[in-house]
Length: 281
Length: 273
Image (cartoon, rainbow over all chains, first blue to last red; front, side, top):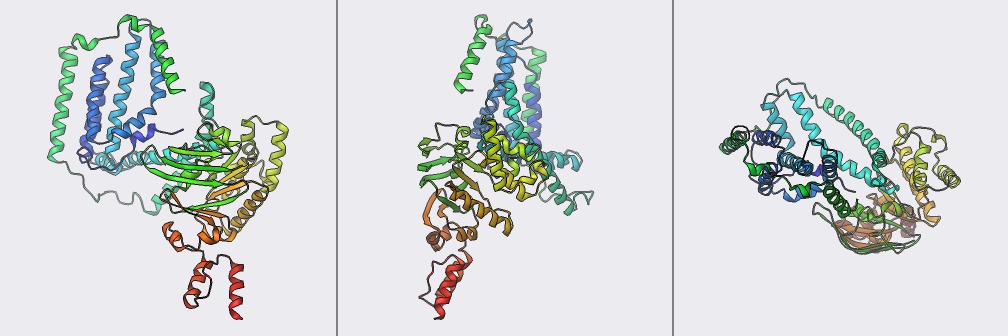
């Protein structure tokens, strides 16, 4: 068993155009893109946004990591699909289309955040937040939490290995049993996280953390002309999309839904069964 | 109970090739130490012995069972795996529950569990700790509890990852004694270690690895005194061997393959005459 979803958010140093952008530019991109994604519930626009983000993964050369991490979201995707198809309110005539658009919405959001976290170094993020007037204590807490994600993921993997070697089967049994299966993972993980926090606090104290009120940085972040160009492009795209969405109104093709004969819950059941079979869950 | 590794390749999902055409046979009742620099693939190799990792290419057979075809849980009954950090295993409220967890999970009969637990508890000297919480114990005690929780399932093969890491001299001696006893009971033992003095003292068969390959496989006496192997695995010779080399520098006839104190003593006394 591998913990792939977390690898989506792990920084790796690479020499690409996107990696060289200022973190503030990328933060601006993440925020505006997320807002855009949340403006749509129709399948077609969500898919268009999703597809539009993918070339950026190629530019940042993280497509491989992204595909690996997507496998980890399959379970969540199945839950979203299942709940939306079978438990949608009666007044929703297109539950399957809706379910698909919710899935693509999740994928688009995950991809946007993955792009950000894989290309922004945690320290740069911290400095960017300070530059954006966030108190250093808070930005430190955020970057530290973010910096420890891979550490905890690695530790969780070690615990999973150790517990599987004792004969624990995490993916066995019904839904409730599966949740209970995770106790042997969660307990050691929490205990070691708490121990780690104590050690970190001691290390910080011994380095006189917080002794100086005004903090300086070794490398100062600097916005380049390219950053401004990108920010302008993002802004223009954002405003245009919002304009189309709320003032012009969406064209008819954007409201496309699956034909009614495909909307049957039976089809949903069939797809679900197929996926479950395919993955041998 | 033997382990056969045939032309094993393993590449992590991240693309890192960790093992490259490793072939190895560990016979029943053997005691073997796998040594090598950090990142040589030692841990990756032993994780194949109970199916935690499945070969990218090649096969790992444990008693003729191909690990590809069986689950880690099934393998756990044959292969016991003790990890370096006991805190990664312990999660219950008392030592007793912790030890009983594995066999209970496998639905072993109650009386058998009780009997096996008592045996293990006596063996590892945990009797007074049964009602304690594992988290209130010392590092050495926790390590023993983790070992007990694996041994209680009576595995015929025992895999130990860095068993002496962070242990003081007395604990190391206890661990060595215990490994020796388990080995004498007929169990196959494979351990990964950086502790060359430990290996020199107890002299298991030694497998040396570098960059995902086995570069030497043989008696401790031969492998640990081979300068080329030591350089490639970034190991220092045992202190006794280093001393033997120093002496041999001045006195050509002095043997270079000495690894134990008693051997050194005999050779030195022989010099006097």
